[in-house]
Amino acid sequence: MKKALFAPLMIATALALPVFAAEDHAPKHGGIVVETKAGDLELVAKPEVIVIHVSDHGKPMKLSSASGKVTVFNGNDKTEAPLTLVGDKLEAKGSFKVGVGTKVLAEVSLNGKPPASARFTLK
Image 1 (cartoon, one colour):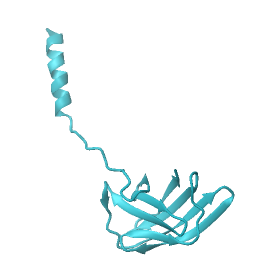
Image 2 (cartoon, helix red, strand yellow; image 1 turned 60 degrees about the horizontal axis):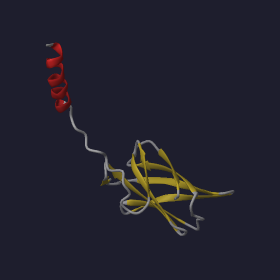
Image 3 (cartoon, one colour; image 1 turned 180 degrees about the vertical axis):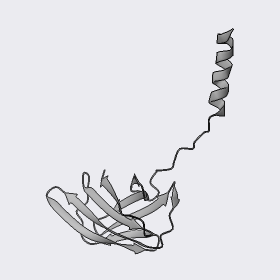
């Protein structure tokens, strides 16, 4: 008799558990996404500009203030550049050696919150 009650109880318990939607961490701008405590950072790296888009659960984050820097590592080469707020994204302009295997460290401070770091490896 106990077994007969156990199965329906387990099914009812499973159905009562909340269902959480998968968080959207997919790139929206063709870059690489890393989740941080400050939000999701999507890095788009080009030889002349590095752009970081910021989102919160897949939705663009409104940035009232933001700053930081990127450090690009390519073999023995290391290039640093400041990030500035341009519209709804952060940009670093310069001359960057980017390609498969290039590593980028982004350190950002968003909307007056403590700085967050993200590490990216280009594919």
